[in-house]
Image (cartoon, rainbow, N blue to C red):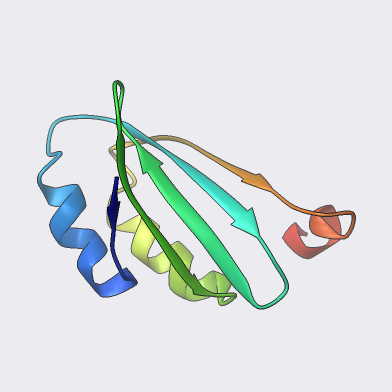
Length: 82
């Protein structure tokens, strides 16, 4: 799995044109660990600051290819997602 930063994400995912992928997010107070998985392999991962709007804007660019987005968080995670 390639470690990328948010600005490199588009380059990695554009290579998957025509394929769907799944997004997993591990939510922490100060950062998000994000991983992208294709049907058969892990594609890319990165850590970014806990700025939900920035991440959502990046994900929107690939919304037609994203099958699902899931997240894992501690006891306050559900509150944070609301």
